[in-house]
Length: 57
Image (cartoon, rainbow, N blue to C red; front, side, top):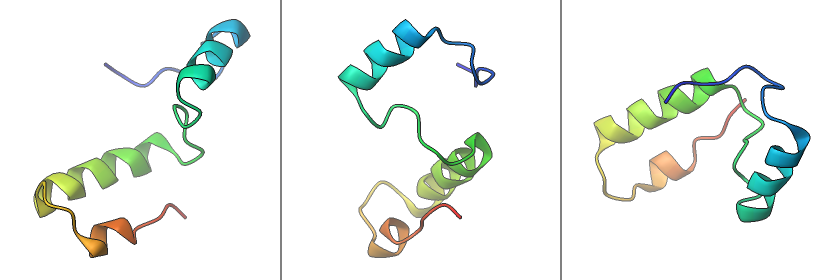
């Protein structure tokens, strides 16, 4: 599933998604999310305090 261009969702659909999960559309860029996911995969599935401290710029 690829990233969709901003504004591609209707306002109605965006509202439905926000009702289900208010965090469905994070404020940080998709590139940051991809790097974070890759780093989590490298660290492993166990919870790591170092990983939890990483925040978007």
